[in-house]
Image (cartoon, rainbow, N blue to C red):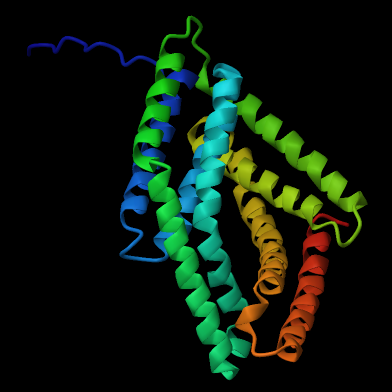
Length: 277
């Protein structure tokens, strides 16, 4: 029997090569989502998530990249995400106030009209930013810098270090939120962002981390959900207050704001309970 010659051993993946493995699918997804905005309004939200994951990816690889370039790219991704998020806020408002909006047809109609306008502005803004070439260039630039690095960093070690850094950030922000005043929603929003960042990292590096680390995804998703519910109530309150024209009169607006205040307090209690505050 003729023995087969052993093939060349596959090169071991390192942190530099892993970046492209994680980033390219997200860049491709964001470009595809942006191209389909006219077909499905929900694509705006999915685009926003893809851009948020890319921002986390750049934060994770920041120690191996030029920090100034990373800051510029993350700022760009944030602006693009905010453009996509404006329409999403109206979606949340319609969900949260759907029952009240249905009772008063003009309010619901005005809110849906405002949402349509926000979608159109988002599409125009994203078209003006040149999202597709910008993302392609970002991926090319970052890959080139990583691939020309002299030292190769083992991906497992890199994963542990970046996950620990994200965990420290979450712990620090949770402590700050516990000390914050009850109406300091910025502190609570920071907890949500830190939890989301840690969650994304665990998903990026799931194959490189101990199983006990990956199991934390469940608790992080729960935290993200509760703090996200609180953030939704706060965001809708600001949105309603800034667009009083959607209401027929001041009385109906005040009733809605009062209902939102009760929802906000209830969700705040649930969020605080989750971190022992």
